[in-house]
Image (cartoon, rainbow, N blue to C red; front, side, top):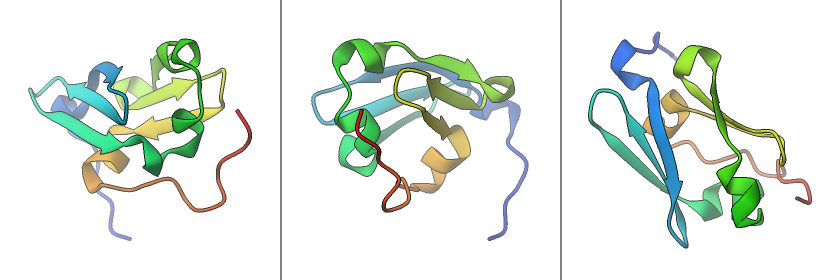
Length: 90
């Protein structure tokens, strides 16, 4: 897989959820939306667990410590769902 270095504008500004999607706002003005079914740990997490997130990885990653989940802006931009079998019981 050919990966490139993330750009400054791809840093994460905010994260929120709808009933069936994660929505991530980037500093460059883009908004990424992905179905929660792609991320089983988030899908099965409580609203409280989902709201307990922090920005990590120099601003390019989101970490949910309660459910041991991490997503990167690059992965979201590439449209990469969680690998199969990666979900643990939340």
